[in-house]
Length: 148
Image (cartoon, rainbow, N blue to C red):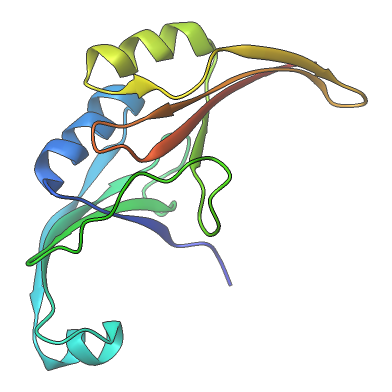
């Protein structure tokens, strides 16, 4: 058994995929997905499911590593932004060398902060520097860096 992917449902999959490619050096994994049909309806539990999107290889892994799957359904069910304490999936996290430097890139590419850069010594582990941010569609992302 192994972890396969995390999915983000987007209102503009191409734009959101571009953000993750430019900000986190994710790599597009062909082919572009265009999926619909009764098989998709049965698997998702939706009626007339229709989606497009792509898989992005996450940084730090070879070509068989886990991916970030960004899909856009037609039609889409929009909802408000979650907060870090919302029930369910909360955020994705990227371990980076320099939180402040990646935060600047994230903002330049259309993301924004959700919190402030913070540091804490965790006994037996080291010092963490982290901040919660949001991608251009409001999904939560944690940037973190550890010093031993």
